[in-house]
Length: 508
View (cartoon, rainbow, N blue to C red):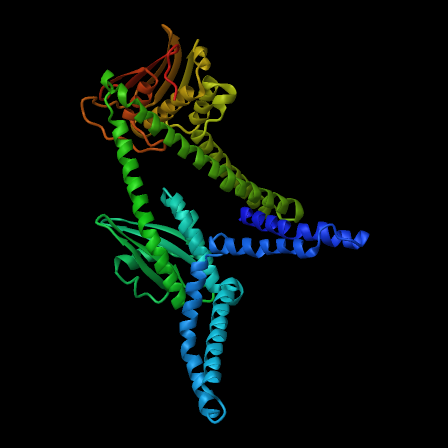
């Protein structure tokens, strides 16, 4: 667009500069012309010629489109122009000759064509004012269709698409429903009863329910998806135009939902594959796969931690300040004041719990105080809630602090998973973590006096807070060029030793 404006300005400059500089200004100042205007005025033709070139080359207007639209308007104008000419010829048959009738017909066609084309043009340009509802739906459709290209999870599906649908239609709530063979998953936004939607879907009464508009998005062999919209805020059902808009939205959603479903299946299969990779030397050629999986896990943890910190924790902090201001502002009896203080303490307890969860998701202290002190702080806090006596020992392990942050983060994740598994399965009374350095290698030892397990029996990958089990811990150790030794028997506790070379640690 800027190049077109530049071309128009240059053509104006070339067209009028000779007349102004060599004819007009000298005549005005000195009463004589350097070059007669008869000659300089020819340059003025350069502007319409360049303008015609821009139009002909479709740089200023799509002349082909303009001609087609005007031609269509002329075809529509033939009927009313013919009727008008026939009425004129009938009323003035004694005075009108063939030339007048032909002129009236041609003029009527031209005038009606111009009016029809102008109406179409200005209706398009003024659509936001003439048809605000239609313009809003079209704008929202463009935004949603653009955003669908970046969706890779069901959470993004809600935040990016469902919120826009609810706001655009000004309804009380909406939901995207996934009905599997034995389960139903609902992503809801606004004021909508997810439990009621699930019940209506099971009884096949949702499509006929008077309070909801239900549109099937996609029917897959593994699931069927629906878009469910409540009544609008005026408590009336959606109009025909809005229903058509929703059907258009669902045609876009169909492809996007299938992609999200495939991404979810692929991610689950990749996690399962990553947990079952062999630990032989022949597996070195697929180390890149472990790297990708660990990076994806860390990115998701960081995103969740940032969301918790920027939304929920900030809201709780604001809520706490409001309660404290009420305590300071109003005089209350002892019982009400104590009750409000208990609420403040409860909010603070929730905030502390979320802060701990954010730390576990993103252990930022690793960079500030190092691995050893971060683990010590983490285990000290966990000792208050653990169902066993939790101890931590460190013996000349400071050499590990020289390693990169990613290596220390891998070790911290291993400790997290060991502790989570101990809470869930060990039934131990004592759990001990030990860090030391021996033979130029960092050694992490985990011991408990719990129930143990039979190492020969196949074990399923545990899906816990970190999303990995013993096999993925092995994957982390192998990724760091280390080794993992496990000693456990039923009823005799568990001992696990992780050895990682300090000089040659593979970094991500």
